[in-house]
Amino acid sequence: MTERRTIRRFSCIRGAAMRANFKPSLDFTLSFEGGYVNHPHDPGGHTNRGVTLATLRRYKPGATVAELKRISPALVEQIYLDGYWEKAGCDTLAAGVDGAVFDYAVNSGPSAARKSLMAVVGGPHHETVKKLCARRLSIYRTFKHWRTFGRGWTRRVVTGEALWVSWALAATADAPHVETALADESAKAGKVAKSQGKGGMAAGAGGGGGGAAASQGDALAGWLVGGGALLLVVLAGWLLWRAHINRQRERAYAREARLASEVSA
Image (cartoon, rainbow, N blue to C red):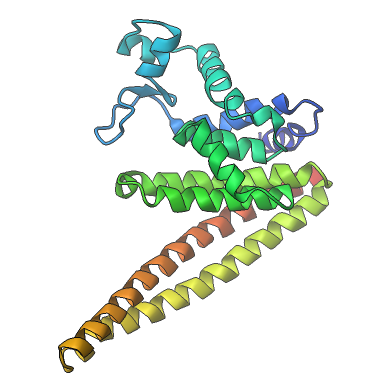
């Protein structure tokens, strides 16, 4: 089972037509979209396999919630192909970049995904994937629903990043080189996470001491010290968040490296 899944991950990008990446991209996205939900904090309302009732009604006017719950796999695939893959122009994109843009489009809309792509595109394709995923998470963290959905969004983007980078690498290199590159990415992420974790703890300790210092100065000095302490707390939070992201990236890249090793074995 693992071997078949691994081979599929790498064979999907070897075809001449970039449409070959649509199905594995959809498989990844659907693995995170799940089944029927009607979350009170999700503006999409009734949703099944990532398809909202409003979207279904564009294909089946007057569709009911019951019909949404019974939506066929074929219609789900058509909706994602028409509404996200093609609208985001994924057929025109390099392997790996296409999957990253598609999943972003599903979450935030094709125009938002393309706008972010234009802001980061450049250099090797696997680097474009990494920059796009970093930008996506940074934007998501500003959303008012981050507290509710942030953990799931993070896992989805981080897991996807490692997968899409593996596609981008495999488009131009054989499996042993892909395995090495993915292992290197894992090691780099782990090293950065460790450094950020230490920095976050140090900044947090500095911010915690600012209040005591401020209580002993005059009003202006207290304001300045208090402001500095607040900045340290913000910095600590950001560094610890980034450390958390990079620990997840370390594990995700290590997992993809193991899968690549099965291809090269």
